[in-house]
Image (cartoon, rainbow over all chains, first blue to last red; front, side):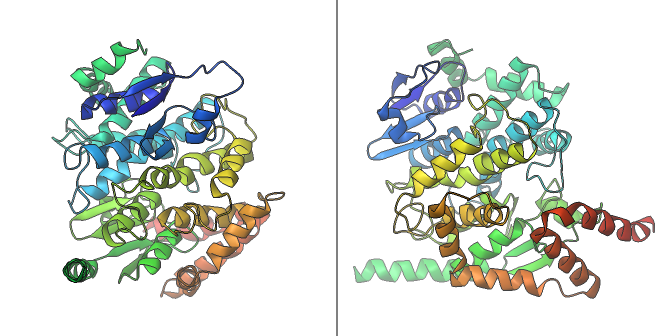
Length: 196
Length: 257
């Protein structure tokens, strides 16, 4: 398995996921400052973005899609609820929350753009944070006691927002980020490639 | 082979039986429509519960399913969830095994998931950003920017006819439904391959049935009048803001009780 990677990018999520799943993988560093991308990367990721993955015949990009793919394929029932488990619906809903709600809502707020919460799928920044906090509702992880790939997505969003200073003063989300950091696989992902 | 077939039939029968409990929180002219389309593609039985999106308050029943109070929301037995893309993926995995979603070990699975993320995670933020007139940083934004998004979509489609080639999947439902809106806003000028793709989606019977569900609208008269106004607003960009304001204003007295 080959992971196209760059430091300080969403590729961190895929590394954390691979470490949680205990999989063997090869890292292919991508020079993100170069104007051109290799044809090898573009075959997996047409926008030239990292992370991208090659697993046998599978070539794909997008951190959320990669985490979903790896969890279902290599850690079913563990890092992803099985297709017929009652938790499956909520799990998928939260897998879409980072790319579909957290990131656009944060970008909109940072750009100072007027938000139209009725039309936006992500509501607005405040609604997004409120939904996230209530989703955790006093639990350690987003599905309760159970750590899943959805926590990798949400946890990495929390860690990124903390380092960029966009995580709102929320004790719930700060504590969640700390719990994620305390995991061995998260530490390995951070230390292995000095990805801070 | 006959044994395998028999097992498949049993699985489908039990899943169709459980499908009777499907309840969709819905409002015409919202992202709920793509879930109706998905349900129609899968041939499932479902009940629609109309949500008046212009009331500031949402029922506890809806909030239990969709914490932001957004439609669509889905109830399927013990499963309660929201987010149109997540719901389409859930339904396709659970009830359209192998046909509307490649299996977990199918080589197409990776690309399929990547395209499932594309509508909410790339198209919608890129289009919103463009309409908002602010260009973010395409290097750090997961969605790049509008131009990159369109090129990736067009290139991904290739010769089609569907995003995974010959195979129609749930990814075509989320991309198609988002594409219908892009087409309405004339964003596909100079991209005939994408226009044709959306036209193919619109010609599907299940798409037409979903459109009929939206057009028939909710059963109560005030809700129907409102759905009509929203549908008019949806096709005329300039009319949207005044229509929303008018509907908000009309709603106000009722909310005071």
